[in-house]
Length: 105
Image (cartoon, rainbow, N blue to C red; front, side):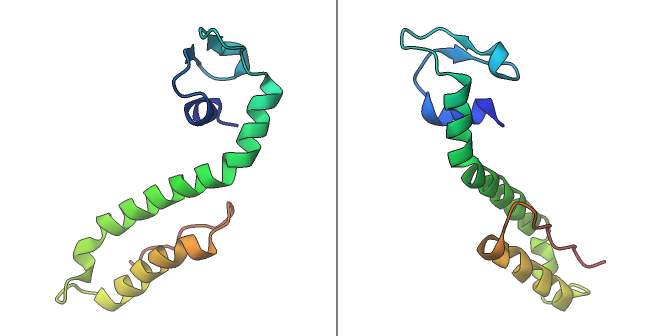
C-alpha cells in the first residue's frame, strides 16, 4: 500500500502530509479526512497502473543504459539487440511477478 501515491492521485490540491502509513496522515484540509478503508480501496483500484509505471521507468532506464550496445561495431551487438527487444516487449506481457530480462554478458 502506497499512501503517498493515493493521496497524490486522488487528493492533489488538498492540504495533507504523511510519513509512512495512515496513522501518520496529517489532514489539514477543511474537507473530511478520507478513511483508511477509502485509501485502501483507491490503492486497490490503482495499484497495477502505479506498478506498471514504475516498471516502465526502470525499463526505459535499462534501455538508455545500453544504447551504445546497439552500435554496429559493438561486440555482442546481436545479443544486445535481442535483450533490447525483450525490454521493449516487456510492457505487453507484464504482470507484477514478471522479472526483467537479464542483459548479455
